[in-house]
Structure formats: C-alpha cells, structure tokens
Amino acid sequence: MAAEEGQWVLMATGRSPTNIAVIKYWGKRDEALILPVNDSISVTLDPDHLSATTTVAVSPSFPSDRMWLNGQEISLSGGRFQSCLREIRKRAQDVEDEKGIRIKKEDWEKLHVHIASYNNFPTAAGLASSAAGFACLVFTLGKLMNVKEDYGELSSIARQGSGSACRSIYGGFVKWCMGKNDDGSDSIAVQLADETHWNDLVIIIAVVSSKQKETSSTSGMRDSVETSPLLQYRAQTVVPNRVLKMEEAIKSHNFESFAKLTCADSNQFHAVCLDTSPPIFYMNDTSHRIISLVEKWNHSEGTPQVAYTFDAGPNAVLIAPNRKNAALLLKKLLYCFPPQDNDLSSYMVGDKSILSDAGVKSIEDVEALPAPAEMKTPSQQFKGDVSYFICSRLGAGPKVVTDESLALIDSFTGLPKGV
Ligand code: ADE
Image 1: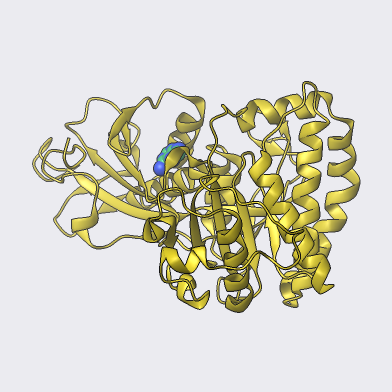
Image 2: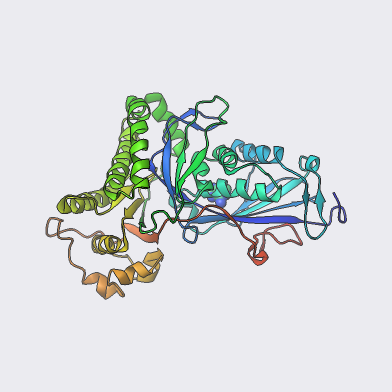
C-alpha cells in the first residue's frame, strides 16, 4: 500500500439492471451454491427505469466491512453477501490509481470495504431488486479490485448472491445455463442477443397493490422442490424443450412463439406453486384480471397481441411487440384500473411518452376511454387496484459510473453521502 497510510479512500461505482424471466427459474438442486433445477431465460430491463447503483470504497482506515441499502445500514453477515465478497476478494489483483494509491493483490484480504447501494425503484415492490443489487455488487467490487475474470465467471459469483442476479450481468436476452458440475462452475449466464437485437419490444409493468405478506422465493422454492410432483416434470421434460423454442423465437423475432411460450411458462410456474404443499399463491385477483384481459384480447385477434409473465408476486409484466400494441394495451389497462388519486403523471413512470401514444393526456381522457371491446359489457372497473405502471424496454448490462459526483460514498469520510 502506498499514499499516506490510512488517509486514502479508493472507490468504484457501477449500475446494473434488473431482469424478468420469460422461462422461469423455480427450484434449486443445491441451496448453498444456488444451483437451479432447470435453465432459465430472461430479458434485461432498461437501467434508466429499473436498476441498482452501488459504490464500493476501500480504505486502510475502515475497521470492518459495512453496507448501506437505500441509506439504511444493513448487515453483511448473511452467507450470500459473504460468498460474493469472498469470491471477488480471491480474484483481486494489484491496483494502482492515478492519484498514486497502490494496493498489492495480497493486501486485499486485509482491507475492508464500505458498500452503498441505491435502487431507482421501490425495493419492496417485488421487482427483482436483489437481482440488480447482487449483479451490481459483484460487478462493482470486480472493478474496484481489478478482477480480470470474464463475465461468465462474474455471473457465477453473482448467482451465489441471488440466483437470478447472474442474468443481470448482461443486457438483452440472457440464458442461465443450469450446469451439471457439483461445484457450480458451469452454472453461468450467457447472452443470447444484446438489447438492440429486438428493440421494438415494449415492456409495461403493472405494480399491483398487495397487502398480503408473500412467501419468500427461497422458502417457496424449497417447499416446491420437496413436495411438487409437477416441478420434477417441468424441470426434466417441459423446460428443456421450451428453452430451445424460446431461443429460436428470440433469434427469429417470432413474437407469436415468444408470447405463447412466455405466458405458458408463467402459468406453469404458478401451477407448480399451487401444486406445492401447502400451496403458494403469488398472484391475486388483480393479477388474474390482467391475465383474463390479455387472454381475451389475444383470443379475439386470433394471434398474440401481448405476452404476460408474473414472478413470485402479484405484479404483471406485459411485453408488447411494438408501441402500437403497447398503447392499445395501456388504454385497456387504464380503463379497467384507473388511478386512485386522479394523478396521471405519477401513475405512469419510466417512458411516460406511451401515454401520448395512447392519446391519454389527462385524467379526463382516462375517464373517456371506452370499455375494452373484447370484455363482456358492462365491464367492471377496479380503481386503486394497480399502484402504478412502469413503461420500459430492453436494456444494457452493468456499466461503470464514471461521473464522480454520482458516487454514493463521500471520498473524504468513506461514509454514504448524507449520513
Ligand atoms: N437487495 C435488494 N436491493 C439490493 C441492492 N441494491 N443491493 C444488494 N442487495 C439488495
């Protein structure tokens, strides 16, 4: 170590996207290493709308590793954080920065880090914040410690923080290969296509109000593996075939096939949850109403207009092939689920311009929307059942944030800014 011993703080900041699986990961074959029972495929969402930003700082003056999430200090003692820190530290290399700070590879084991992370979307909304968070932690620690490993290896480390985090190491369309090795070394993510490959796709997320306490994915998966006969059939017989078809649909921009596979896989995942003892209910009445709306529309057109997928919670992720269908979808959704407090601008976050595409500029325009033609009349309205919508698109993988003013840690104190 050089510079004035104990005086310096060295930092790196990164930003990582979240992702949504279109072929679902549900069930582990190894709990400690987080190894799945089947391959999964996801789309990475635009980090401008859904991402984690993390600053990691190192200084000889830090007596212990510490972390702050959205401004609150959290414990790093959990096995998942410890695995990521240990695996990245093992691979750390010599570092020399432009201010003359030098850290030898062997010194990293003795140095402690401060980590500050911030999600640009509500952490408790059930939007895979841990996927973005662990991908960002591993990516940014890797930058700070000058880790030279390729992205496949980084994905395998992120996987040990949160399974789906391995897919957030890449942008676009990503496959998590389950792997066969007992040590998990081949359970890595690969990019199928980048975010420019199919950039017409529009993603609308309905953040569904939920009062009910959900079963965590970790315990839900464990119960499903132990009790659901459908899970075994799905993992061994259904998913391998679906993964091949999904890869083909993505490669050829075949929305009909993409949508059918996406909806069928979401429904089978929730069927596995129902097949679990005791059964797990992640979707609620609002989720079911959204499925019914999309299914009726798709059926009336004779070909899929939009795909839906639901993770371990009630939020709907809706994927449209283009802006025209996304705008048509939005009109139907706004008719069925008008905003509670008549405030349209906070009801649509992300790419708000989809509202003008839908011809909706004011709450009066929402009130004037016609009932969706394919719904039985009079179709019911459910004001307040959707908290808000996010309009997004496919996005890129993790990036270093070079603007030092965006760092979450003060380079003088080594503590989160504002703490
Ligand atoms: N869990 C949820 N969000 C996270 C973040 N940004 N970093 C680490 N873990 C998280």
